[in-house]
Amino acid sequence: MVEKKYPDPREEDIVYGDRRLSRPDVSLPDWEVPDGTYRPVPIVWFTGALFAQIFLTGFLFLMLVGQNGWLAIAFTALSSGAIGAWTWQRGMGEAGAGWKIGTITMLAFWFVLFAFAASTRI
Image (cartoon, rainbow, N blue to C red; front, side):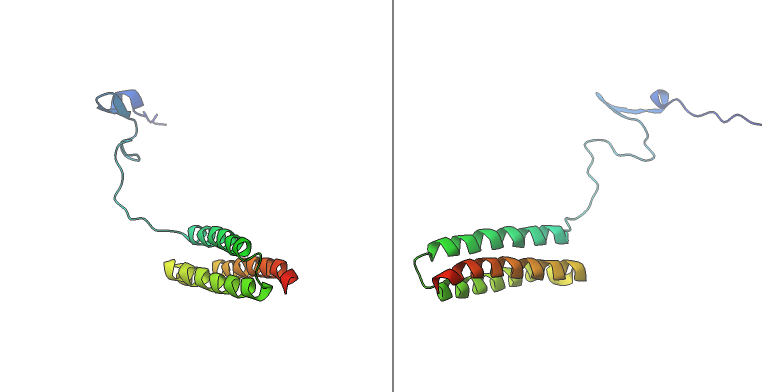
């Protein structure tokens, strides 16, 4: 049987000043960034819609606390629709069905929650 000799990584290292790159066949130097483009993922769009929905509907609820509940429900419905349209335009429209269903469910849940709270003023 022929014994295979593996190279000593310390002798095979590529040294750039005070930096060392040990396996040049599979890694890049720590300062090298491979070319690529930013590709947002659905979790980013979902989370953006979630935060926008929570903060905007909460803000509307507090701003309209002395008004008729129907007004708060109408503005909350408009904001939910606007957030949904914004999220779809950002890219959610091209995401998987699970992300679309989850986003619609989340927007509907927060709308119903704030509408239920505003219904006490009707």
